[in-house]
Length: 445
Figure 1 (cartoon, rainbow, N blue to C red):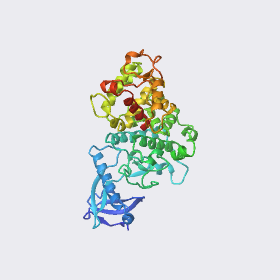
Figure 2 (tube, helix red, strand yellow):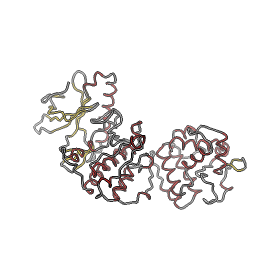
Figure 3 (cartoon, one colour):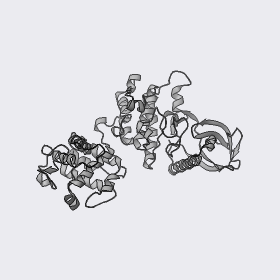
Figure 4 (cartoon, rainbow, N blue to C red):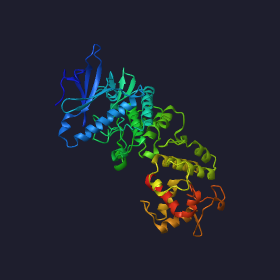
């Protein structure tokens, strides 16, 4: 059953006016506060039909998590994020109800669809300005370790026709929002394929963000990431749909919609820089870190070709990433739990400034070409062949000092760096510990 017009909730505090929408999990109502001001609000509840579902209690739990999540964001309100006003449980069944501000306006989706008429495309300046504001909201969300996971035009409301407001944090809480194509994965036209496998990385939002801008300036749905990944479908460049957009905007959208997560900008700010045209796409150094590590010093050492100091700095920031300021060696369990975002940042910096000669992904490829197993499991013959190729062994003896090499990229074999021959533990354990280092790359690169 649904609540009808005039139904009163929370000791007559709210009066239902109409249903605004419903989806796989939730129902949203427009209501008014029964006060002299008669202020409009939105009330969201779980779909009552799901009470017959054996997992209903889990859905309710996730719903409450969403309420807490939005409450957390509202502690420091952002002008482009919907505000939570109240939470209560209604009736004998304790139906959870989340009260939010009512956004007087239309969604970006409805604006573009234009009520069945030809798509109403946003001028480039207006589209970029709209999405830039939503990007600032996403930065705030990500700083709170939250990923929205359902960025699409239907979840961007335009208050008064021009102020964009990000709504519906259902998937951020692990539940399904209205109009999503499943209970987990968001809108298929705007979701990257890895999200459909459960990814909760920031790059999920970056893809949805870029795909939304694609739609805003073309009026066309982009090719789904699933079809691109598994059916060899091609993504049509937005400029082919709309030749009036700039090359910079076209490139920025395509960069944000790269099929593989590691190829996209790794932070919202990096992608916003592309929209602003502040930096050429190829020149951006994404210094993302899950642990708040500053990678600028390492980048500068690499850019200067100071390979030895850069290698030691890599060791230092690796210790920071696993929560240690000092130590002798990085232990096996620490390799296995190393933050993926930081690993990718380190690898990209090494690969870029060595022109593809050094980096963990380079080492991984050499190991595979030496006969190593794709899952990274130890193979003595392949491992020793790899070590000979990258220069970690010389005449079957493990190298443990830089003194045995001339410090220039011309003398280093491909894949030699990062080497990280620091501390007594590394000297004693030799090749075994370095093997763990390569296993690290198999996990995330």
